[in-house]
Image (cartoon, rainbow, N blue to C red; front, side, top):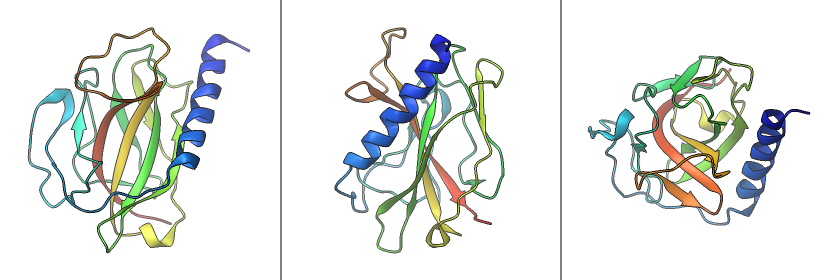
Length: 169
């Protein structure tokens, strides 16, 4: 197995372990600024959830548009360093204003280097038609020097949180 394949496998396992360890769900509130490349913009109609503030690290050069549809097979794409092994965690914002995780996965490792795309479907009917928080992550293996614009939890580095609209099949 190649180093990249092992890194991808490790990354997926790490996200699964982190997801299993989550015991609290943040409540509504918090900052909603951020866009690709570390700039700022209003999050418009996107809900705010404390602990899930929208942002994008400078290392991400292209991010999805605010409110982009995800979950019905629509493609979502990011661009960043070619060596990145990205993962994501998708949560929807329920009627109480809390983030509820519905999915986590790795991006396709065979995609062109530097462009990361996923086309996954969401089957949680409670998420359908709701805003979601698409959290882009990677595992810090020491090959990157991250600026202060990322969020770290152990070896897991959150590179951005983006508002999406969840549509299910």
